[in-house]
Amino acid sequence: MAIQSSSASSILCASFSQDNRGFSIGTKDGFKIFDSESGRLCYERSIGAFSIVEMLYGSSLLAVVGAGEQPSLSPRRLCLFNTRTGAAIKEMNFLTSILAVRVNRKRLIVILQEKTYIYDLNKLKMLDAIDTVPNTKGLCAFSPSLDGCYLALPASTTKGSVLVYNVMERHSHGQIDAHRSPLAAMVLSSNGMYIATASEQGTIIRVHLVSQATEQSYSFRRGTYPSTIYSLSFGPSLRLPDILIATSSSGSVHVFCLGLLINQRSQRSNSLLGSMIPDSISDAFESAHHHVRHNAVPAGVKRVSMFIITYNGYFQEYSLSISQMNEPSWSLEREFNLFRTASDTMIDS
Image 1 (tube, helix red, strand yellow):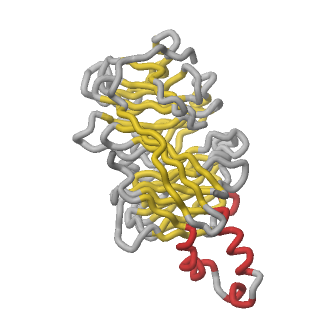
Image 2 (cartoon, rainbow, N blue to C red; image 1 turned 45 degrees about the vertical axis):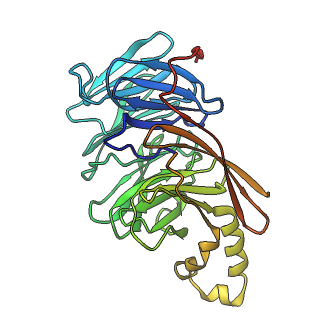
């Protein structure tokens, strides 16, 4: 997960690789690539400010976009960069600023304010162009899986509707009306089976099964008072992810246990009372599967490692253990400043 940067921070962007083994940051001076497991600095380049730095797993390919503070680093130019040779592979220019970039082994996605472009990554050939509603924040969700390769985009500026697009087969998969308020964050699970969304209200987080795009799956209450959701992240899984994690402007990390919820809902639906209560009402009972780590932003049965990049330039790894009684315990395993050292020995990608 990456917590949204602030104007006072020198971090302009942060993102993890598709397998979470590495992460990148863009700064006012350049960009850096780190190894998530060791925390080692793998690559850095100081040539100016970057607003987008996207990795392709652990390969030498990066998709980078300048922040516009230098004429040579236009926010309208996408550069595919090879960290091994230190040279640009391809530069692509657009009419308006690039707001987001997503990539997997077959596709390159470029998000503009009112247009989304889909490219064949190997041939760098444009396959499709999608007209979108004004998407000033560059909101999108993309699954790296080639079997369930979906792209999610806002479908409305007045409510939280999501357009789900099949990137490999190049057709619309459907639309999800998830919230009454406009979207603030969304994420697809790595296998493309589930999508989680949050609105600008920030009190409810919803999880939908992508194959049943018109039906609501699960709802979780983050809190009573409105809060800005900065990021959402699923835990890795071959099927249903065990957990969903959210960060918010309250400075807290929220963990929702999906696996425990499914077991409870299955048991409840088999009872007489459960069969009489629709899911939209029974969701009120799901708070037992919501755990909060307060003040996580400043410096048993299940054990989860959670990586966080904070707005003030720290990498944190938390360990979350959940007992058989569904009782959580947190511990900060390690923390370090992303600007503490100069470049270490580079890792060959």
